[in-house]
Image (tube, rainbow, N blue to C red; front, side, top):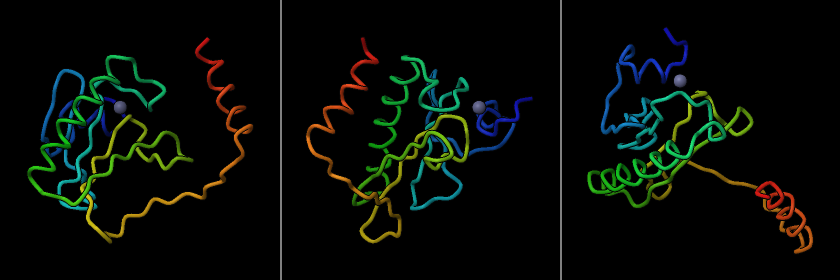
Length: 137
Ligand SMILES: [Zn+2]
């Protein structure tokens, strides 16, 4: 038996409240419910994070997220919806099985995500971009 809690949910060894599934993904209610309608999309085949997804899984998550987000919108009529996905402890990941949060949002609902902008000059941006572009060569 896997010791990964999401693998166990997907296998049905741990109960979950499911809302959607297809060949590669399972969508189920987040137990925390930041706002009503908070859903997680997880890949069925274990991948710890974004870096471990194959192209088929990546496409499946995008498709499922879009479909489930529309259903949440239609069911709960939130003012907005945030998509949240974390990779690694430093990024805030707590369950190390790839998943995406679909979070219905409302003005002043208490959820905050802020970051300190650095606004570096263009030549610094060009240097950063070059480091990334080289990885596609
Ligand atoms: Zn897993």
